[in-house]
Length: 529
Image (cartoon, rainbow, N blue to C red; front, side, top):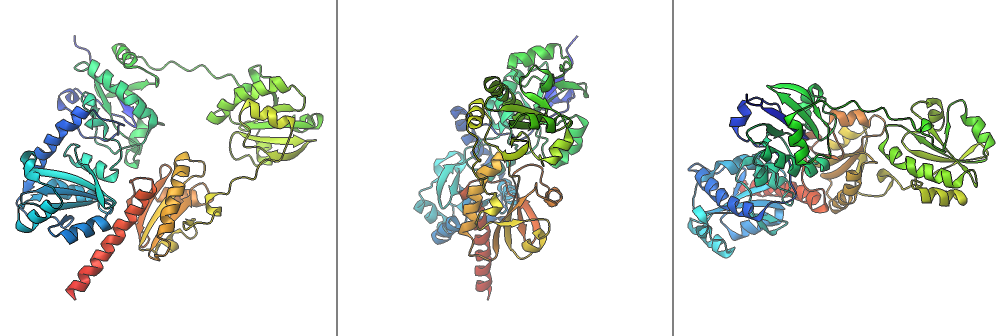
C-alpha cells in the first residue's frame, strides 16, 4: 500500500494538495533567496537567449517598449530613466514576453529594444560595443541603472522573473530560480519579505528532495489581501505557517519552526497534530522577587516604598518576556536599597494602566514618595536598571517623531489626505508605524528623496502615521496590510503600489522615471505643433 500524498505547506507559503500535484510539476511563484549557484546562472544565460529568440514575432513593437536606433535618443533614455532593460537583437521582430513585462513594470522600469540588424541600429550597437551575433541565437539582454550599465540579465526568461528583477534589480532571485528548490512545488504568488521563511527555505528544499515521490512539499505566499479567506480558513496568523493535507483535506499544522530537514521527513512518516502547549506560569506566581502589584495594592505599596521602579507589562508581549529575567536579576541584587522593583500586569489591572496612560509594553516608570516622576524607556537590562536606580536622574528628552522634524516630506492625516493629493500630479505616499524598524530604516532615504524634488510643485513625497487617530481607518481603506507600504497617486487617484528599492536611489529613480515621461510627452506635443 502506497503512502498517501501529503503536503507540508510553507506560508508566507501555503498550499493545497491532491495527487495531481505529483505529476503536474512546478508552477511559477515568488519567494526570494539570498544567493544562487554560479553554474545555475550560466545555464540560464543560454535558456534566456533561446526563449527570447523563439518569442520574437513579426508584429509591430508594443508602445510600451522603447525602440531605439539613435545614439542621442539612447543616451537620453538612460539619462531620464533610472531602471532600463535593453534587448539587443538582429531581428526586427516584436518580443511578446517583454511587452507583457513592460506593462507590469510601467512606472517602475523601462523596456527598450535595439535592432542591431538594420542600418541605424547596427551603428548604435557598434558604438555601445554590443554584438548580439556573438551570443547564442543572437540575443543580448543588458540592464542599465541610473544612466550606466549595471549587469547582464542572466535570470530565467519568464514573466515573473523579469518583473521581479525590474522591480528590484539588486534583490535576491525568486525561490524557484534556485536549482536546489526544484523539488518544491511553487504556487503562483508575489514575493514576501519574511526572515524566518528565508531561513527555512533550504531546509524545506532538502526535505522536498529527500521525500520526492512520497510526499509533496509546496510553498505559497498568502500575504496579499486576496488570500485573506484562505488564511482564515487554515488559521494562518503569521509566517511561516505549515499546513498538512491528506487527499485534499486539511488535517493540522506543523509547528516545529526550528526543524531540520530530517525533523520534517521523520514527521511526515507519522504526521501528528501539535501537542497542547503547557500553560505559561504567570510571572507573579513564578517565585520572582519582584513585587507584583494589583489595582488594590498599588497606592499602599508606593506609600510604603518611597523609591520604586514599576514595570507595566502584558504577558503576551515579546519585549516584556525578554526583559523579565533582567528585571528579576536586578531585583535580587538591589533588594530594597536604594529602591524596590515592582511590576503590574496591565492586561488584568486595567484601572492602573489607564490611570498612568499606558499605551505600550513594557513601560517603566519611577515613583518617588508615591508620586510618578519619570518614564524610563531606556531601562531594559539588569546593569542599566541597577546603575540608574543607584543614582536616579531625569531621562534624556524623547526623540522627536518624524512629523515633528523639519523636512520636505508632507505628513498627512485622514482630514487632509485626499485634498492634498488632488493637487499633485505625482505623489509617493509612505504609510508607516513609528515603532516599525523597516519604516525607521526607510525614513532617511525617503526624506532625502523628498528634499531633491522639493522645488517641483507637481511632485510630493508624503507620509501617513497609521497609528494616529483616524489614520488607522484611512490606511485600511488604502490597502495597507503591513509597514511600510508605499502607494503612488496621480492627482489623488491611486495608481499602483511601489515595490522598488527602499533606498534613496529607488525613491528618486521612481520619480525621475515619471518626470522623464512627462518631459517626453511635452516634447512630442511640440513636435506635433
